[in-house]
Length: 236
Ligand SMILES: [Zn+2]
Ligand SMILES: [Zn+2]
Image (cartoon, rainbow, N blue to C red; front, side, top):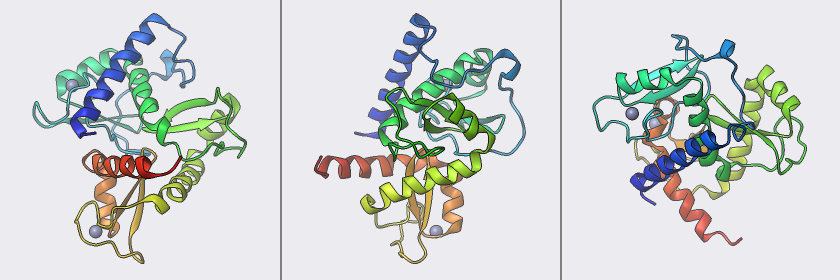
């Protein structure tokens, strides 16, 4: 599937989610609910967690970069990227619903990629109605609301565990032998594993790792294309 197709798919999902959310006010109940008091506001603090990794604008769903340089905003450390200041204003005027819609797009995108059927908090098997939420652009799946609270109290520890699970799941199936940034052959001894949005991205050095973390959306299509090929060929 081409990047453009994926973008259209993401936007279609987005539109669907928005329609569903409008029709069924309770349907987003598995995501973290945000009260007016906790409403995310733009902050100048450092980015936490994964960078914004979608190719599409968080506000209008259009392909980023087509109307000029995209605008990056942090909401309590969460990175969000939009087309321009108009989209930023539209996004902020629609908070917190706009963030909940973005969460739904990311859940739909990352759920099929989730690396484990166990909770990273309790190691228990995830139930069918697992609690799912986005933390700093990353899908987290846990057994219930109590585990969600445990995660939120100490996200760094659990994100490390999830990163490990992604690497364990993906590394044996990773079939790109070149650095995603420089295109040089990967040296197994010095290759760096970067995890973004429940994907593994491999690069040749720490500098390239920093570049991927700062702008994952430019490399995600490569790994998604390769992953789709591996999944297609893997016996089920
Ligand atoms: Zn836009
Ligand atoms: Zn490098």
